[in-house]
Image (tube, rainbow over all chains, first blue to last red; front, side, top):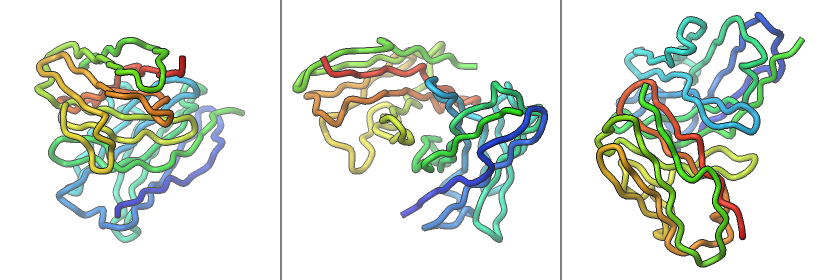
Amino acid sequence: QLQLQESGPGLVKPSETLSLTCSVSGGSIITKTYCWGWIRQPPGKGLEWIGSICYSGNTYYNPSLKSRLTISLDTSKNHFSLRLYSVTAADTALYYCAGQDYYDRRFDPWGQGTLVTVSS
Amino acid sequence: DIQMTQSPSSLSASIGDRVTITCRASQSISSYLNWYQQKPGKAPKLLIYAASSLQSGVPSRFSGSGSGADYTLTISSLQPEDFASYYCQQSYGPPRTFGQGTKLEIK
């Protein structure tokens, strides 16, 4: 059974780079069945899709974040990563990684989430 | 971007009630519509995908319907564990967008 787990710093300073990793177990990230996505949720608010990456290396980014965003795969470690540059307090959120069905693009399963606070 | 509008934003109901949540897209999304349940402190959980397909392991009291731009999630008989927030999400076009959520509370 596929399981995902986020990891990374819980505190990032304004203007610096937020870096998170999602470790995948129970299956390979090199699969035609899944893409891999990041979703975030500011405290007390709704869900926002950040972006996704597929086994081919193709990436799909939310236009609102595209200029500050890189999502990548590391096949040797079976994980994928998020880098968000030049963060501000508005980037404070619970960050989730999720498997994304390649065909209908539903998100399942999800990681448990990791809270990232942007503050000096 | 495709905008997703959920209603109501909050709802009070009793155990055993039938509840319906609606989601309207700003354009037709051809049944590329998914529903998630989120409990406090937990990640969202997929309930329904492709508008009406029940995710494995999800109780049959949950159902989804709709087409074009209009979709509904129905809980046929509310159970205590169903009190949570619910989100719709369109997977028709990027960016993948979510509704603003519906918080289901105990009356």
